[in-house]
Length: 365
Image 1 (spheres, rainbow, N blue to C red):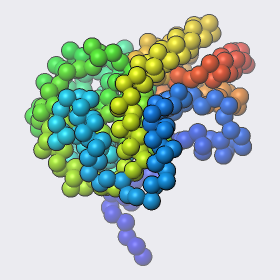
Image 2 (tube, rainbow, N blue to C red):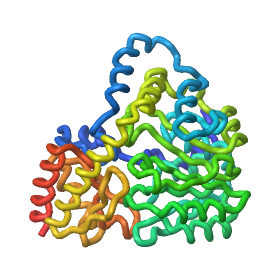
Image 3 (cartoon, rainbow, N blue to C red):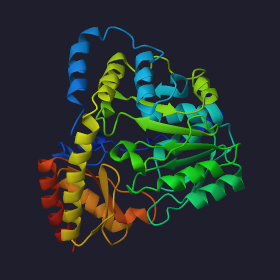
């Protein structure tokens, strides 16, 4: 009989997220509005779409295992060296590599309870021990994260800014001071998946050669390439080089690389998306208020809506919306689980959500 690794035997057979496709199969119908996965319904740049259409004829080729041209374009965007960049299969893939690089069984890792569950998933797969701190005022609690890191001598401390699932952020100077305070034996993993929705003055300034900080970015959100699975990390050269020991060198396919390059060269795309998302979040906030709920101020492409009850009620709202073919999600940790989370959508999506949300709330009274 085949024997699995000791760590694998003790892991649950699940995934961090139940996808909308899974729910559709269980429900027996398709969602009319897909507003739960924080995807960008506004799509990729037109330049990226043109490249993808044209390059399908060359899909027989492997992607460049060095991601050379893409790293050059990323380096131009951030005014850094390509030696400080590693490309991977989205942030999820990079988190898997990072935990594999640093975490041995029994070693400590610190994160926020209710933050990105895929990070926890990867830590568990290495046998790492997770230590969780609570949100404070719907934000990542930097003081508690730092205290827990020092107390537990954590190898990694994970922080997202702006954060998921609440959409809030810590001010740049607070993140900068947090990075400076991390013990040199710990690594700050700063997940900035949603930073492309921010103005430049809200993005922390952390020197790229800071030896114990790695910053994660993605093309899945504002760039609208979630299905292409492409992301990157910025960090010190010693850490970036280490990724080459374990990464899947053909992990990012050729079309994804070329689409990402085209996206970066289209300098008008992000400002356009920021405006569209801003309009959508404003409309969603108004809908929340009209229904006597509270919108949590968001710096992302989704809105957390406080339903002013408890987890059971919020779950009933999510289920009720699903029955009306509206896909949304909710945070899974207390007290954030009093909320539902709704992604920015187009005018038709928002109209459908508005109608269904009002009906569900009335049905639950």
